[in-house]
Length: 242
Image 1 (cartoon, helix red, strand yellow):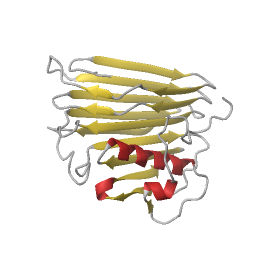
Image 2: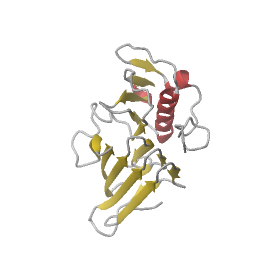
Image 3: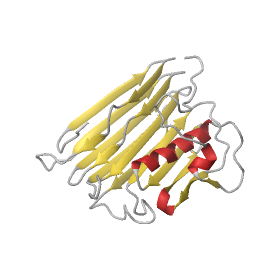
Image 4: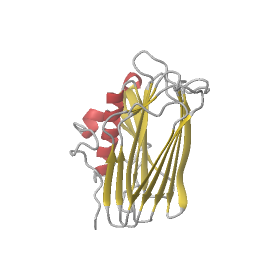
């Protein structure tokens, strides 16, 4: 959708009730645009997943365009038996265009306790957002969060990627929670999606991951062909009892 524009206030409230399965996606990318006012736009997403319920949040990418300012929040509440698959993809600028200012905060609570609370800011005048410790010159970034009571988190962090020019993804368990978080940077949206899909395939694989200090694989060789999550062919988490 060609929104939000400067000054817009958008909000979504989505609930998967007990023992239901819900998958949410979008028909096209969300495009943050400069509006007639200099006020920032806000886009607030609130997700709630009940006991023994499953929610797959799989929107198309968010594109931050020149001159836009967007503050986006995700607020997620899970029961102890909830299952969540959350994918977030951001494209910083259209072709040959610098991005606007994009602020994103993701807060996840499980059984009332925070298991993840992170805040990122990309685009000028934010400092160091394009430096080697953050994006390293890439223009697509995203993450994949998987939460489930039966999830195997006894694995070492896994690095996916063919080299700095092609981007990287790192999948690691969260502390004291049955959850895996993958963070990725890439030169293009297509490459970003392949990295995140490769991470999803690894997370869905029941074979043991090498117990070294973190293993590295190219996304294609490690996971095989990686279909886009949400297209009906990806290994989406099972929802027993739903």
